[in-house]
Length: 289
Ligand code: RIB
Image (spheres, rainbow, N blue to C red):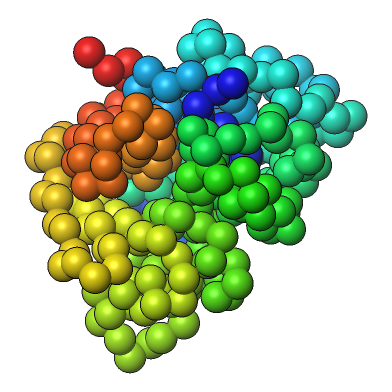
């Protein structure tokens, strides 16, 4: 059985470099775009596989020709695709503008991702690491967390795109991975500091919170111990798209290999830095040495 199982989105990314990101109502011109495999779920599965974890992907693509692009890198990396459903409609798409500083704006069209189902998960066991994000229907993700909890698997949820989580939902998550924006929405406490927000989520029942901070590194929060801060690895930034996904996939692979959470955060932090110097989400994911 694969050690890392990812339930989530599989997209084709249309990536356009722009001098600066457009404001509301504004049109920006550019002279090219690339068509690349993406989707937060697929990116995380590929990152786990590139970090030497036996990995399976669970999700859905459309029978529209784009499915071949969407699954290309996963297939080449040996990710198990038996639980990827092929639907009649369109594959999931993302329109991504990347500015000269490597920052992006992303619009996602769900397409076949709306048909991704928790019932297509392989049987899980206590050695499995289940990874989810928020680009498929939330009830399916919540059901996967319930199944993961029942099986004794480690459940990692990346709350991206940002969404609010109830105490009951948090209680089925072992490790919640968020950036600052996602933490603010998940925590529902405007007055608290960032650290207080993360600690507040621990009090509501999540096992651990990892806050990714881009150029400021990452922080790990666990009950009863001081937060652990890991500095970012200095890197040349060309495109930050998928850096968070690289972090999550590498972290999951490290847990599956038996590392503890702090060791896994350090490894994931270093891996995520490596992807920022290359355009694209999956095309930037290197195999580990
Ligand atoms: O996190 C980056 C990903 O977000 C892109 O690959 C795009 O498909 C969107 O899902």
